[in-house]
Image 1 (cartoon, rainbow, N blue to C red):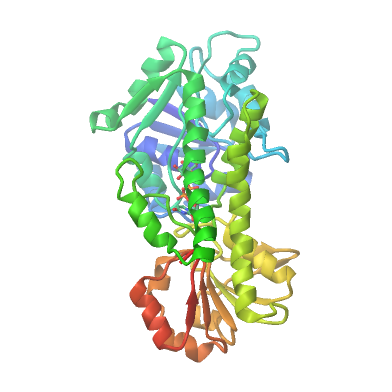
Image 2: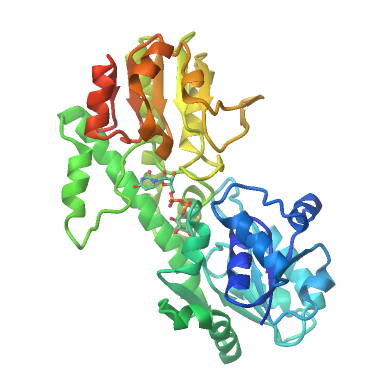
Amino acid sequence: MRVTVTGAGHVGLVHAAAMAVIGHQVTVIDCDVSRIKGLQEGVVPFHEPLLREEVVRQVNGKRLRFTLGARDAYGDAEVVFLCVGTPPRDDGSANLMAVENAARDIRKHAPRHCVVVEKSTVPTGTAERLLSALNYGRNDLHVASNPEFLREGTALRDTLNPDRIVVGTSTKLAADVLRDVYRPLIDSGSRYIETSVATAELSKHASNSMLAMRISYMNALAEVCDRTGADVERVAEIMGADPRIGPSFLKAGLGFGGFCFPKDVAALAHTFTQNGVSSALLDEVLDINERAVRSVFRKIESALWHVEGKNVVVFGVAFKPDTDDVRFSPALKLVEVLTESRAHVSVWDPAVDSVRVGDRDVFPHTDLYEAARNADVAVIATDWEQLHKLDFFSLSVEMSGREIIDARNFLSESEILAAEAAGFTVTGVGR
Ligand code: UGA
């Protein structure tokens, strides 16, 4: 089928590559000229395992191409997936300007009965507005909602082996077209859930907020553990053993970040309020998340007495491992708070080349021990696998202090023993 993807960001590029892998003829359009030019030369503008190789393979196989022209992108599209950004406004609501701009081009160029699919996360009710924006002066375009559930770092794998494909439609034609689009994945056993457009839209915010809520719940419990001597890691293990709860997303630490959870919880809170439902539950999820960074800062402070003038090495600045994404990263927030408190902060991260802290660019070290030179305290802020290879004796030679704050409860018991044998004191979160 002829598929167009609007937006060459994380969601769009991964989705486009996956659509090509399952046999469709895919065109990607983006208004960012340098991004499209780069992609035409095989340059993927962010770090995502396996994506570059797949993009190059699909381009060479002539199933994937990139364009800047709206007529070229939409002129013969059977389906258009909208994967444009929907960033948060100050009040938590989503800014849908990019969706509206894309709708204008699609309305002008798309062939009759093209199905336009919301793939970007949008508030419930967006489809109605989109439908009227698309059909201004015509009345044949269809709108569907097909939220994506991929995780950065495992995005391509998640998209090609989804635990569910959710499709919300209001016309038979749109339902048939989307079933055809996903036929290869349905035939290989993926769960395909068909529903109304509003239900599909809401299910995305509801899922992300539920996961964020679990994390904040664990972080609130961690605060209690810190005061009572209970161990939040064991509490999580015991809770997770109940099949009704399950073990995932129960990791306490520095809190959640990235471009999805913080914005989606805020957007759902906004939807609650707009519909006369109290958003207190969701507001508290965000509050606890902010407290998590402050609580780690206080642990650093208590290890150092005064932070000002001290050398702190922060291991990891990405919002989670296997990505170079620092948007809403709690690790970055911690670096900012430390810097504002006049600590000398050195950063290590294996994927992030540079990051803006206040008014200056910071270039993370790629060598752990170099980053740690003369540090009074080391903080594990992102749970990068590489940190499991830490040699604590080499670290102790480089550092001047003997404190490790494990803000992700990342170190295993044997690693903590190894650190202690090298003279370190390890402080975790709620353990
Ligand atoms: C999240 C969802 O997991 C995806 O299903 C969804 O499709 C995506 O948002 C999206 O809306 O696009 P992602 O933002 O890539 O995916 O990251 P996650 O792996 O979910 O992690 C989010 C944050 O929570 C990270 O900062 C991570 O460190 C933190 N986290 C995760 C915890 O603090 N504790 C946990 O137990 C799990």
